[in-house]
Image (cartoon, rainbow, N blue to C red; front, side):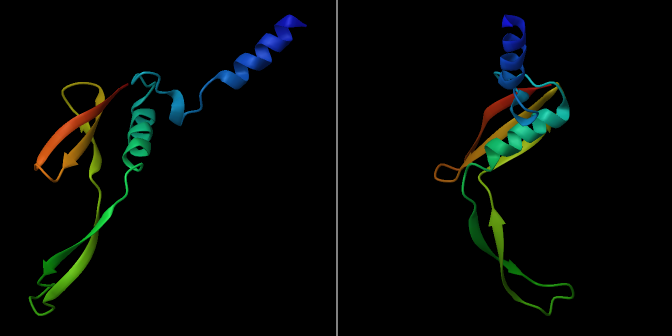
Length: 101
């Protein structure tokens, strides 16, 4: 009876695929990217206006784009996905999270 209860509790306690990155160590590149994207979406995006010339230069005007302060990049020198955050006040980019796979 204790074994059955222990097996059921251990099955419920195991993390899901997105939460499988324990202390930054993930099982695969996909899981690392999913965990990083989940982290990146915790910050609100901002709408910025950019000047656009259009396809042939005739459609001059401003267009609105959505911009995020957090992005995820693959580090090709190692098996890591980097969570990068931009601080717009001091115009600096910092690596905040590292997800190994």
